[in-house]
Amino acid sequence: MRRVHLAIAALALAGCTQTGTLQTSIAGAQAKPKVVLVSDFTIESEVGAIDRGYTARLERKLGIIPTYQRKQRTVERVNDEIVANIVTTLRTAGLDARLGSEDTLTLDQTALVITGKLRPGEPVTDRNKDSFGFGTGRGHVVAAMSASMFSASGKREVLTFNVEPAGPKREPALPPKQTVANNAAIASVIAAGGGSTERLSPDVETPARRLGRAVGDRVLAFAKEQGWLEVAEPQNNPDGKSDKPPENKPEQAGPESGPPRS
Image (cartoon, rainbow, N blue to C red; front, side, top):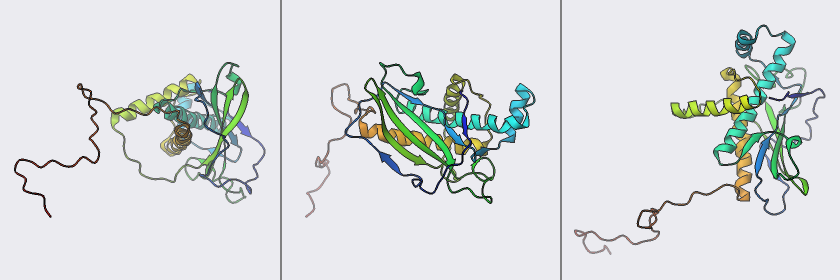
């Protein structure tokens, strides 16, 4: 996947929007875009990713990785995991989601382009500077997201929001076949972008996936507001009657029923 940008300058957090808020800057409904493009994240330098298991597995395939490259490699892989989960979440709901950015668009395309930045969720101090990111002892990362509509008439920002992955919790286990299919879909997106499909360790992979799904869910909520998602119609029986039971229809008394109670 494309090289992730590590921001050098620290971000001033004092005036940041509270995590979890959703803001829209739209006037009326937006026409459904032909494609949704999900771009790589910009990642603030204070957000780290430590996964010694991942780098060890990668070295068994590629050879020794210099120490100064390990953080960059791991951060890039975390980016790929988050982006791939956003893409698969949107695809599952029926949107044509792909990896990409506004630089890949042509003038005749209409697209929703999603971009984001990973930043510390609280002001950085000497005491907490090593606590932001992914891996054991790390967390407190906020994804500051925006989405813009691109068309022949230009670019228009339509959505901004912040998301922070939920704390550790036991999630309901998926059926084995669904788990395999989900892992394969994520790996396929990562491979399509040229990223490493070597799995991250659970303490890194789990929060990265949660963050990606949370971002995807926010975008889907917006898409639902705009009427972009198809609503399944109730299926009909062969005789043309709907399977949906009639509403407010009085119950019919059976053959052994007595007179109605007073």
